[in-house]
Length: 385
Image 1 (cartoon, rainbow, N blue to C red):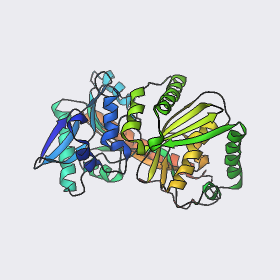
Image 2 (cartoon, one colour):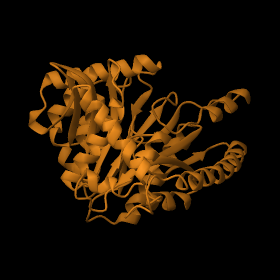
Image 3 (cartoon, rainbow, N blue to C red):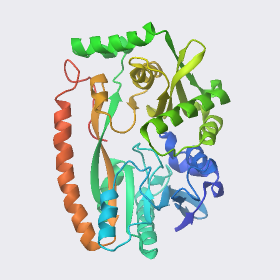
Image 4 (cartoon, rainbow, N blue to C red):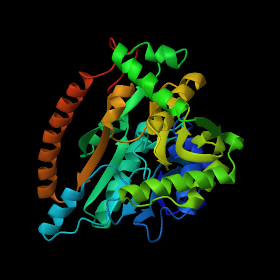
């Protein structure tokens, strides 16, 4: 088996990559990752330099992982700025580092991609060992695996990686008939609040549109990009994504893109972009103009939940953070990242920090679970990936 570094997905045919990535998670697809390259979101000048690892056996790709050389820690959603600052204070260099992740995407998924017929353990171990070798040969500070699955987490722990635990809020669908069936699981006061929030939007004369697939037109992409930019400016954030990225997604993977727009009269006043996997809807970005009561909840959560129920999707992940999601039927869910630092002393210090942090996250999730809005336990929930 030979493992090669590939610096652009242009060099890998889409069918070969997708045969390894599968069709469960849209963010791992050749189309999504290449759209980031094509639109200039990663690559020269961005601090995200693709260093994909591809394992070949008999000349055919049998495994891969999305890896990037990073010059900073932006766009990762697993925050290690304090570690970087500690390196600087000690006269050491933290950057560049290596990150195995989907850029700008706090979504759990496989990072060790292996085809259905491959020797899974052998291929995964070869990819991990090669990634470690890349870090060591380039004398980098660290190697990070972000938002990985529990299975890959356990394998990485055997290779000397340290586990970090986070918390997101996910909605689960045990087979609801409709939105009212979902609300029937809520305590009375919580149920009335959500109905009132949805009514506020209707009474404001706002209509909701869901646009997906071939119905997506260039003007929809422009409108959504405008809302994305509005949110970035409002919060003083960094605009990771370009206008071309939105257009490229709609052109190359329209069946996975789900736009939700709020229209008042003849104009869109808010919009959200979601991506659809085989059994999960993923909420990513939203924006608005004007001040409409509860429009954020309707555009980003309630309409998406409606969509999941109608489409028979099992889960809705509405993005990172957001304790306000708890009252709207999302349950606390652990996320995992894995970390390996080259410097032994720093590695020990980070290991101690992560142990304390995990205890804090566990207590935090226990407290959150005491405030779920349901009359009883929801029909199907999971706090573990």
